[in-house]
Amino acid sequence: MANSIKVLTDKCMGCKVCEDVCPFGAISMVERQEHPKKLKLAVIDLNKCAYCGSCVQSCKFNAIELKKESLQSGVDKSLYKGVWVYAEQRRCEISGVVYELLNEGKRLAEKLGTTLSAVLVGSNIKSKAQELIDRGADKVYVCDDSIFAEFQDDPYTSVLTQLIEKEKPEIVLMGATNMGCSFASRVATRIRTGLTADCVSLEVDPKTRNLQQTRPAFGGNIMATILTPEHRPQMATVRHKVFKEAKIEQGRKGEIIEYKVNVQTLLNRTKFLSSIKDTSAVVNLDAANIIIAAGRGLGKREGFKLIEELADLLGAAIGASRAAVDSEWIPYSHQIGQTGKTVAPKVYIACGISGQIQHMIGMSSSDIIIAINKDASCPMMQSATYALEGDIYEIIPCIIREIKSFKGG
Image (cartoon, rainbow, N blue to C red; front, side):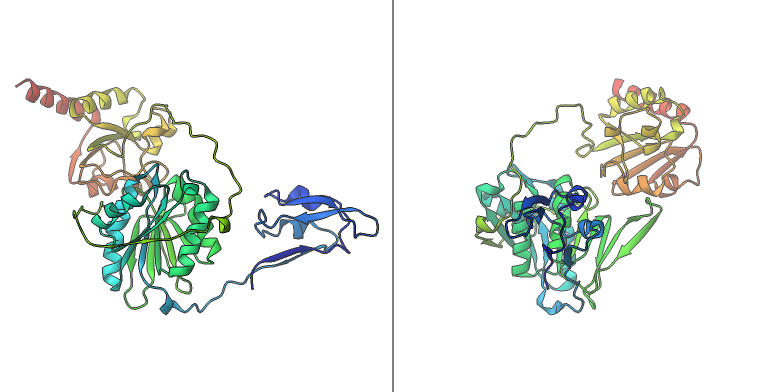
């Protein structure tokens, strides 16, 4: 049974309460000629309605009837096969998180004995399909139309929903980017399945074929593993830099499937006007090979001058823990962790950072971790490749002198 909602005209009094409480602007008052008193009665725009029930609860006259689709358990899971990665792109440039998801998706697909597919939605985008095959995709579904030239929630949600309903993958992975977070939940709602956001680890049980989706919970204080055992597909968004990128295998063979979209069936309630590039100074932590991050252990804002001097010598980017950002020692654009950026440099130098789980989530994929801290027992020192116990203001100047001496020689 699909969702349905209607106004009972014999009960509606035109009081406008439902119009005022609707968070989606889906209700308006329209004069009804068939009404004996020709009152203005509530009319619901089904293209805007989210079936949230706010209007039903607010109506004192029981004039709105809502029937919600019940979540069906016992889905025939045998109909669902394959691991999918949504290949996010903007202006024909594929996002780096896609290559990371292809790497992890390939591993999951091999454990399940199934195929890995990518879904590429855009305008004049077909030429990018081979890049996804070179990175491990066995199939690439291409949805190429001018309506997808700029990202808009409605058409992107509609086309991905249609494709999932037609092909029935058992796992769908998306990047936890601004774009992915914007419409992944919409897709999950349309196809009546679960979605786990901001995953930092994925695993599968070959026997049950359940995707084990691990993400921080309770403010990052614990790691929760979430299952979707009764519904398919299983959907998850994953943060950038959590996994390593898939390696390029030039000329790899794969299948490109063009999905012809009937644009008339795509809902689109918005219009793209223009794009304004952010010209503010943003730290490019994502691309940095060396990151020097500092935390509460600096003790003062001025401590970052020492960090900047070391970063200049090493050609490194500067990061920070949330504590340093909250203390207003450095802008938020430098923050690394669950509520900041996720990074994976070759070398990560943590200065005065204890290593709370929220921060570790953002940098644990670093190749080499060097920790400098007075507390040898803190999590960061315990997980570091190299741990230097002592005062930052004694150790870092020594490192700076050695580097200058080496460069001078």
